[in-house]
Image 1 (cartoon, rainbow, N blue to C red):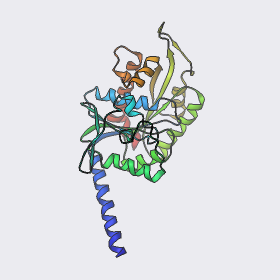
Image 2: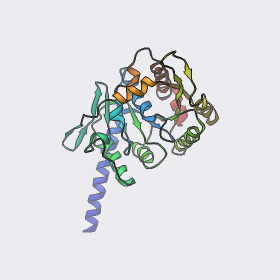
Image 3: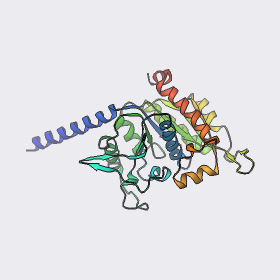
Image 4: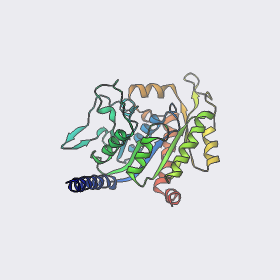
Length: 285
């Protein structure tokens, strides 16, 4: 009897693994966005990066792997939407015709609900976000990881298999840079190519004169990238309008003529050159 149950359980696990692999086979490029600590604007960067990629006529999926702090729905202005269900499969929420998103935030009873789970439950949900969500064919899957190098980050890397790379988000001050180095080392230990470091909140854009003031220092992200021998993807200035846009659920990268949009456009070009060009292949060998 026990042998039969074990065989059935093994068959079920094999089937789930086959479904997961089939989902991932439809994704051309998978990129994780990490930070060594919270409060550096990682989710804002991940969301705007996904939007910026979709603006280049690419089909993009954005997976919110931050189970305890699922802020993707808020930043993208889709808090009131819910994924449709077809049988045992979820349909991700469409942000735009070329951008889809999935988050635990869509499934909670209210916006104030807290998720009080241990590692195994979180790993199971992340598996479902890959295997049980009908992502379809994607050019890019962007995964917004929670801060640090814990359960969720490890689960995503192990579940998704071969990744195209990681993007590390930091701010210029030394404390954030210390933790960003840990994120780089996490990627290296797990053999995930490091696409590069983004220095966020790099200079405050004065709304009156348009000049930048270096509130959180300047250049630390570039220095860390140089010391760690990884690419530096660019600086995103701290703009009060960007904060307001995030609160209103409007991706700031959509705003014409802004320094932030220009910064993201340059970052996207570097990311695509790494992932789609020779850089990614060389790094992953």
